[in-house]
Image 1 (cartoon, rainbow, N blue to C red):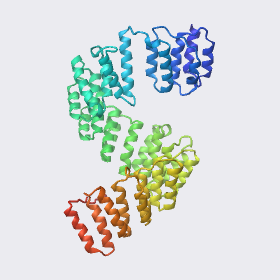
Image 2 (image 1 turned 30 degrees about the horizontal axis):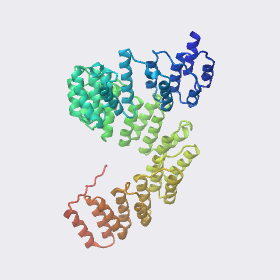
Image 3 (image 1 turned 90 degrees about the vertical axis):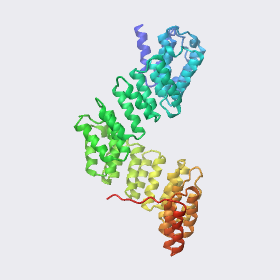
Length: 528
């Protein structure tokens, strides 16, 4: 028997399951445990060998006590749905599906597993449908038999704006069964309300809780940050009896997203120096954009040094890619080149190359960006829409018009990437900068209607203003006004074109239309 357990247990060790399948064929008679091991292997395996061999195996049905175990295995390992569907079919055809569940605790465990898996999957609303079905059909049992885990999982599944109505009903049901003061259930309700933007209801749940765990505080912070209530989040953060690195990271991220990099950096320093909490990789990824907005190379180098000291740069490619982007935004192209040269090819991914290309583009180094793109293709990586957007931007700012047009054709025809408004905008801007306004107008006219917007035409209008092209400028102005009429800047641009060719009366008449049509023009500003 010990030998049999070792044999069945070995299934989880093999990467390729041919050897184990060979051992399976030697077993006479077939043991019920073998199906359990087979289900586990199929669930966690990333190969297709086991799915091809499955119909050929003669696996004896297990005893009636085994269906619960097999179904729980299906729920715990959802990574191979096609293989699991085959096993599910086998369970039905072999009669295992009709074994009764006599153990209420086992039945509840299975119910909770189903709800949990759906709530954590890509379609959490299925958990709610499953719950509704069981209540209306009286399958398993009705809601009075559910426990705190059931309601916690259901609350998590309701954490979506489309499921708010169900979540409110669930809250009433929780009061009815008497779980309204349980910390897990309350935390689930808090997540449901805060994720849906119902912050008043979330605050009521939060402040009515008799006790709160660290997870509870962090869930409330997450909701406040998500809906941009950063100041309120900081107030809640300051009330916390104890704070984890997750708490600090949430608040830092809130100020980074709010474009307050100095405050974010101050909090980052307080976390290390006052609370003595070491930042994680996620914390660094949160603070890097704030450092980039400040644009101080010394702070950038300090962050880089900290990442090296903690070993994050060598162990996490996300940190390396973020550092490439950070140095590029701080204007230190030499460091970007050094990263590309020192980073082993096996560690470079598409984000690494794209970050470098984008860095060269934003610093006006078009040729270097194209050379990096070629090196990326030599490394065997296929560019995506973000990579092409960076290349087109590099060509636009570097005056490489023909190269940019070739890349656009390559993107559409060779790589079969469907361009979006940003790609079209780059091409229009590139042609407009070069004075090729007729071609730019043709490209803009060929943009699909579901993609085109007024910003694209304004880009072309700006180019017409630079090159004093009245004819195209008037046509483009009409296009813009067909889409949006409330922006006075459109009238000002066309007025400037008319002034440039000496048509002062027409220019004045156009500016007068700003007041007549109650159009507005945002005042400009600068940073010194």
